[in-house]
Image (cartoon, rainbow, N blue to C red):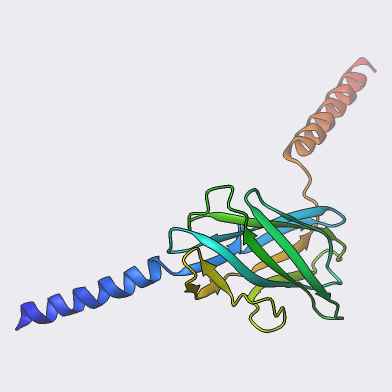
Length: 198
């Protein structure tokens, strides 16, 4: 009896672990948090990990805080074509709808598949932050795609992982601190010599 219970628990654990390990996700290569200096452009790369052998297309919306980030460009990664649809402006959040389609010329295996890059100018004040959110768009684009699909036409339910971009003070490089301390040390030595000479 105990053996059956243990085997059942292990089987359930294995099933849960496998489903978590093979979950489809779309996220940014840069992680979930990006610190950046003000008035500097940043590029975010959108990447998918899918539990299929091939990915063919997907609809997406990305959104951002327009007081912090200003979208200046979107480009497809190698092997993909992107069709930007509409920028939906807003005071608190702006959004861009687009479709990524595999062009059939490169590897489109499911893991670490990079689709597109987005370039923003950072215009927010120090301490400001913006969530750049990726969400599946099934309704607004109306182009026949529904979220992400595999090369066999199967629908790929997908989890989306956001990134937060935070404007920070530009850090002073360590070399500058070393240079300043060395300069102060030389001034101190020069003053001692002048005092001794007097």
